[in-house]
Length: 239
Image (tube, rainbow, N blue to C red; front, side):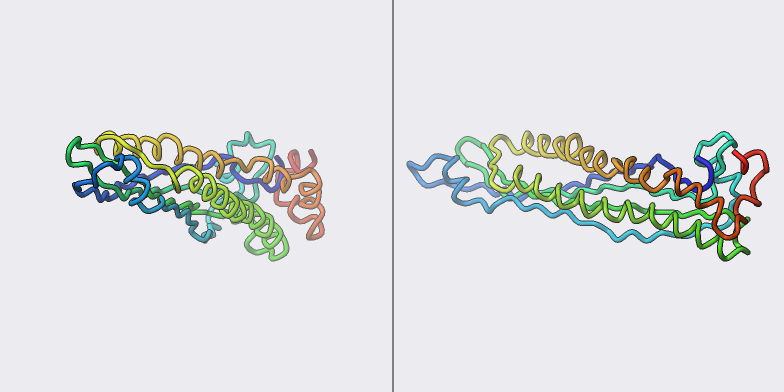
């Protein structure tokens, strides 16, 4: 795209932190099944999905040619501003449970705390436009709209994930050996819930496309008395 554009790719860093388990050995009351005692004694599973506020940093050190290369463009479409977020999903899990003394079986109800963030978020504005207040503010305002996409997406995904995790964990009791349960819970968080959160947070293509419209590019050529186009090579500015 000519003019304003952001990077479509998000860098992803996922972290899963080991949780703490509480599973003392107990003697169950006679004539009560182990499963029934688990359901009666264990507290509900706990779920917390948190977000970290997006705090962009501004980089004005690169030329629009640099930004064009960073965005993967070939030079026919110049990138004047660029927003590059790094997605991070962290998960901390644990569980409340106890072990049947006679059989060694353990029952647990897990808890999970997830934190979603974009960090860092770097907003680039081509250094050629620093001395032109009108052009600079136009480019920066455009990139702030891209930042807002990620702010809204964090809130949207966190709410949906909270609901899904609550439905999965709140009333579910897991029975097995302690080692088996720890492996299963860790695998579920690592292989299911973290990838689900990452995929949802990266699903922003349509939102960014709604900002990077032909009408917006036309505006970039006409605002500020057309000065933005004057910074670009004539061959491209006239396309």
